[in-house]
Image (cartoon, rainbow, N blue to C red; front, top):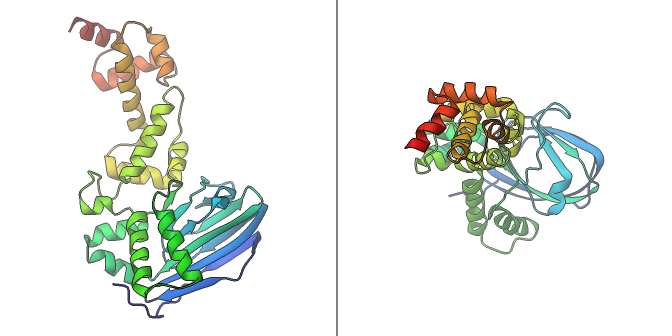
Length: 302
């Protein structure tokens, strides 16, 4: 249970330009958690740089989220995402860029890292808890989290319920944002790798873009990670590189097309993102041990 006492004070270093508050900051504090409710306005070209030794969750509460892009690198050097719901690990620098002049509102939850780790370690393996708190999350699909965050924002702005109400909302947000599913061992995900929703997102993206070359940076951007972080987490979880995984998807798609007789090999190669028929043949042979033409004949005979 979160005991509501003010024993933790968040620390944040922030530099902003072209962003101004449109209302007074409203906040509430608990033991190990501080909630800030910000109303602001940004102009195109503005932005900021933020870093804190404490982990935090940032949730945009309105459509103004589309005006803000977030990155783990300075402007121009990282993958930008319009992450509506973000978890920022302790010590991770974050940059924002305003791409549309408009107002926006966001709720920031600052956590005492040691207290949060103890809370998670009591329910999950300590290593899994540490991994969850080390992995950034930047998601455009907020699901029920946005509704929960709006309820909590209402309590921050104008308390009307018992403190237990706010405690429950904070715990619900933590459970919905942090990548803890794999720590429970009930989602089939591998500890330290990408979460289930992240794999579904990039798999759907690849299936829709098999006809062209997709860079690792593009895949990382789909789930709000930097290219280096994504590649490391992907290999740790699946035991293969993103490139090899992409090639396996292309080979599977080629097999599906080879099962019919309506498409020529060159056409199939183009449809599945290979440079040409020769490229597909080399990749296909490397994975299956046979050529696409031989595979088609064998399966036609079968």
